[in-house]
Length: 149
Image 1 (cartoon, helix red, strand yellow):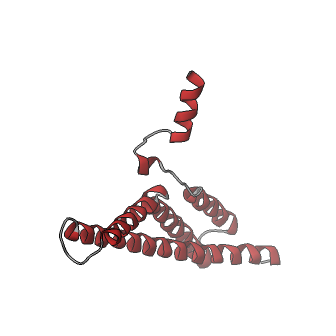
Image 2 (cartoon, rainbow, N blue to C red):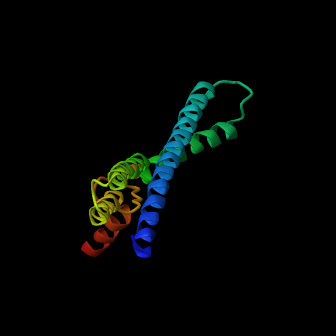
Image 3 (cartoon, rainbow, N blue to C red):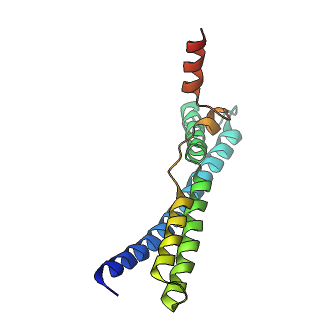
């Protein structure tokens, strides 16, 4: 095996680790944001409208924080992005193991690397989920409305 092939294999090994780490990090982020949103919502709903010693500004702050957490999960489509990285990792890791065992060659491994990259795609930010729009961004809708006048 020449030096270029060894570099390609080293790159694939590093991507397998990176995608696994990103999937785990995204999973932890979803859990942290989700738990924060749930606990915050429960806290606010428990104490709102009562004459407890919880100041109104604190309830509003916690309510806002809960909303921001949910908006981040939805806007960055964190669950789907986590699944993309996990599925790409599964594909490339399994094919790398086959490569190590001698069942596939480097060219076939590179084919699966390309497929894994396609599975990941680009990072998507969509505030459509957050604002309730299904197909177009609000800015695009506003621009179309202005053009139609």
